[in-house]
Image (cartoon, rainbow, N blue to C red):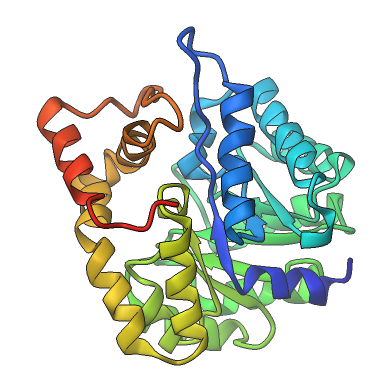
Length: 305
């Protein structure tokens, strides 16, 4: 697959599957594949195993590899659908490189590099970090995940000049004007720009140049996320905002207290539907009873098929 084809796959709903756990706390393989199958059968074509909604930082290395392998096994069942897999990698450079190489060996086409968690990140060091990973897997498309508002477009542009396989940017700073400036300073046409703050920010970021958005909500209601994508592609912002209004309270609940319950809300909604257990790992935590009732009430009237 060419980098152009990979870039095109980013201009879509980029689903971040949850990682379900069994009663003993291990990754529930059957449930994971069933949830992924539900996404694929609904029309989702780009998935990111080991994203934040998949509890990337709570999984050990063997579990992260397992999730990749389960993803590749399930997506291989629908080759005609041309599903694209972009694997989340991160931590220290050797760990990220090992994970990226494993992703390629497993058959993934791209990797998404989580923002470095080091407390001290210089712009030049950020370039060095991503360059080391990108150069280790030149055959894979590479997508930096940016949550740092201090990283400017010129830094991203420099990385793109050094590494032709850096094909897209997942931008997750909650500032549409900042995004517009960064994208243009880096190269609006050089990268595929993905709105990394999901449906709640997708309309504003789309207007500024994004052509795809990530989603954890898609686990719960795939058709709702895909309806927003259709509306944005058609330039029908009224229809997109109708979806926005529908999911606003749900996404606000996920975003409360600096996204403390981001994953917990999604897994609770899946548990309400009987699709997986609600269990999450620390530092996430189960919702209390009042929050559970609120999640169940919010799903009323949604297209959950």
